[in-house]
Image 1 (tube, rainbow over the protein chains, first blue to last red):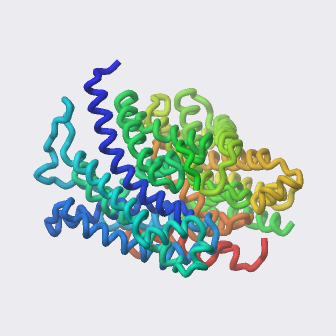
Image 2 (cartoon, rainbow over the protein chains, first blue to last red):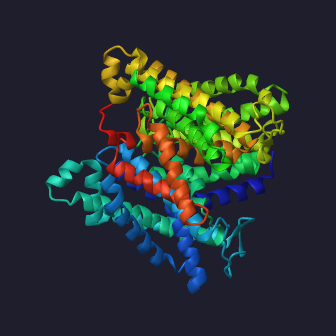
Length: 290
Length: 311
């Protein structure tokens, strides 16, 4: 078989990527859990956030990690407004409509990026881009380690908000029983928009952790959309712990798949898992069904 | 009856078109509109009449295109002989996807996601294997003879796509007026009630996805003959799935002429914005996306909804 050290490094790499996947998937699963909608524009929104980080770095010289608060606020605002003025208005109470509207938003964002910034793949270079850190004999790029720690921290903050604050309580109430929430005086539409905003704010954070070790182009979101959906379905739609575990699992599967099957075929593992889970266990591996 | 008369009038009008129009640009526009109408109709049969929204119809389109390419280039088959094989393969992939997803009761968003994943799996496979030309794709040699389904003028292509497009519309007419069509629409409107009335829901959906897959692969086969090239991204990429769905939804789901109207509207909007913005990449698709959002918001029954006839 393979050298155990290569395997170890590969698993480690998968875990660091998995943490960022988990953060992206948490935003998606929050939106699903509360609004019961599948946000097809999630990947396109991540792409926009990556461009945001890129331009903050290029035009204003802001380090991607320092851009974190700016991006979180920007993406939150974008999500809130998007729900209030587009998605919430178009639903007419039918899930199919929301699916189509978010698809429409994704098409618009992706091609707007293509129109504004062309299809060039862009990367940023920071002082630490190529810094390697030895861990147990394997070398891991520093940005990936920061992404790992940062994604975990962001996840912790998100879970604390959901568990401890009044807003979190309102969100959970709306997720469980929206009629009841309305009856006890919760402004449901506001909570929905807040949830959508928080979901996209996760992407703002993910983009800051992602870009130093990644790239951005108008199509970059496509790859993440299916991965994020896979994680969300794997973990059980709407389950936070499931999304976290699913993120790590998919990160490792992708990393090992690439090792064994090669760059091109390696990706297929994720989609086969996705199809298999959808078919045989749509309630998710951990059975946490809302 | 009225539908059939309209289809006949439309067919005659398109048949006579090359006598009056010689502009290659205009004829190409008509060919592309009919081609998009075919894709839209394929999506419409499953999505509009059957209520099963697919986000991965490229899986059938790509299969048709690759079947034509592989059969001609690698196996030396004639294009006209390859076409029925391509349709059969499209239907077979439809049965495969349908049997798996409908057996396990996937619907709504879950079905949309699983079709998207199937298209991605096929894209990666086409990108990997040598007999599909891997990432390079397959080019078919220029032959320029009707015997090889390649035509020196545009009129030949126009008649070919017209025949396929009309076939799609006749299927839609059949769905509107047949017992099977009634079952399919009953499944769309309320699956539980349909099942309670004795409709075999699984089978009805399976037939719909097979027909839809065959028509979509006909679109892929035509694409290959017209452009003589296919690669994994063209064949199985998300763009083609989105175009098919847009034509049907913009025109009006579950109607006979919706996909044709939708295709015409999309091309009008696309050419318009492209003309205004001097061919900048992506602008026509921005317009498509905005159109999709606006249609869902304000005109859920598509352009056909404007005619006020309840379907």
